[in-house]
Length: 431
Image 1 (cartoon, rainbow, N blue to C red):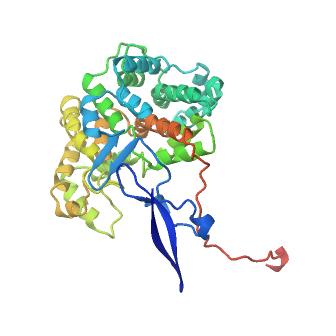
Image 2 (spheres, rainbow, N blue to C red):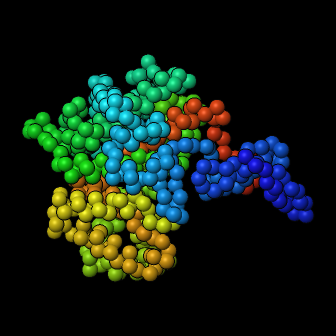
Image 3 (cartoon, helix red, strand yellow):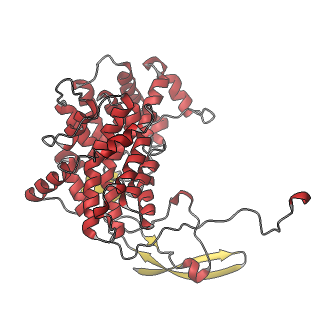
């Protein structure tokens, strides 16, 4: 770290304050304001944490201006083309790509932790028949702490690792059971002979009545989606997991909090919003009308799935997903499905329109992921659940990193108070 001077001014008073500057491996310099309040009696004000780094991390790097996403230093383009989701999960969790023996061992651990305690089946039955799957996910994941007392010492690195394995392994089983409860079908047990993604598809779509085998393209698409969604730095849900974990809550409670944060339509629900938008547009012949509405600042309509909070260039994940989207539509979808035709036409128009190009409103990962999930016959209310499965490894990786950080302390954001000044209580009969 090096020191720099920054000028702080209040009315006519000026004072030069020395603040240390952190130099990251990649990315902008960060001014360390840790002692600003203690030494100067000043807070920083940053709604939405647009310019605030809450932690040091070695997991994911994003350069939104250049459209770069890296897991542990590996470009997302290379991982998407070469790796399996379990391989990427190992990378995020342990910091290095596994060798053959490490991958086989890790895959076996995840595979043989997929079963749920049978008593949890009664818990699913307690939810209303039409409960949203994300509501079930929040409750069931949080309840796991009631079943695994043997490894809940958050100060024990081995316990933290076991909990991470359990969460990665059981999340697809919980998700599929949530779906089955929602549609009124019996829960399907995991199959240890299948890959992570093939197993999820079987648990979701198989029934006891007949054999089921997932289409290889569906498995491939799901594997790619899960890699692309595995982590994304300090987003809202990951920050929620870290904040909950800073209080030393157990990992199952922390991930339940992350799932609740992910549920918001501005975060994990964005791909569901894309499908709702396409439904509203309805037909290719109406695209021009809705493009005009999107350009009208007075019109509340917005093109969902275009632009990104972080990426000011093309979302690198969207670039990867475009080709898979087309493959899935060609192999698995009804070629006459008007929604898919509408989506592809909308993408074509937006990529050529100067209005969207000037504002860098390129299709993002949510635009394509929603279309792929629909082609895989996954219902809209399960889109965010699929996101939660993929992001679980990112959440637990950040939780484990935070718990091993000697500088970790309970999160306590400050505020700028704008309410009433001090005043005296007035008795009821005098108000």
